[in-house]
Image (cartoon, rainbow, N blue to C red; front, side, top):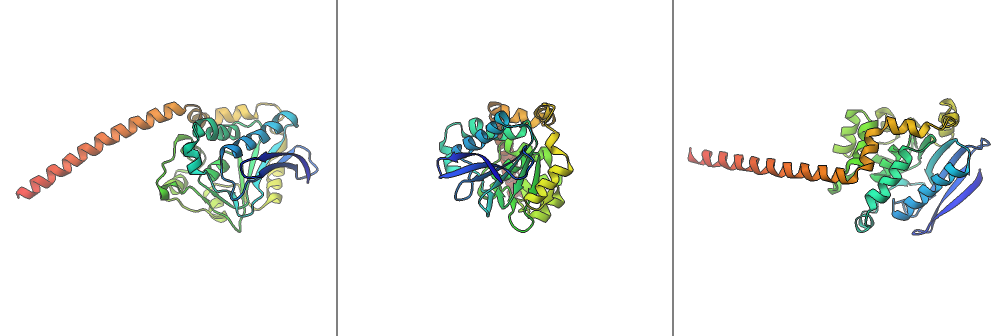
Length: 268
């Protein structure tokens, strides 16, 4: 593989390396290695977006593949403590990363070499295609297990791309999908490694899809509902506040009904 450029991930001493995996010059393999498990942090986000920017503005249109240089993990999701204490992390950083992949003006393929949990799974879903290691690694949204609700852009990409049954199993069961389960559920497009990714690119003729310059525009229209959620962070929060107020009203009334029932039962 011929190396094209490297972007450092300063907070962990890691890096993002872009290479040509074949003799075909416009297939770009973006490999990120940010010890210990490729957490999606502000510096990771900045480095990954910069790599995408460099490819878009300095290289011919083609296909972007992302994968991890850490064998166990594609990405273990957010560093929650860092995310909470970083002002604007969601709307100015994470949503920006998701938006960049959702609307990227070239086909994107995620090569899931290992585990992708929570935000890592979401990042994979924001790609156009996914190939998963058949032998190791799980895909899982496990926020249910530690009590962190998903916000609109975290939820909407699954709703948009998965069947209702799979969407339910991802969100309400925190199901762990190995390669075969992922393929059966329609989460990934195939199983394997880089050879299978290159086969998918070849079979679907993806290298030429961005040539007319409207590939990103087509995705903006295709995923307009997801894009609206990414771009309206304040509106999402206002909607959630309204829902919480309504929920409080319903719970108060239901509690009153239970207490009334208990009193009537005690009189019998």
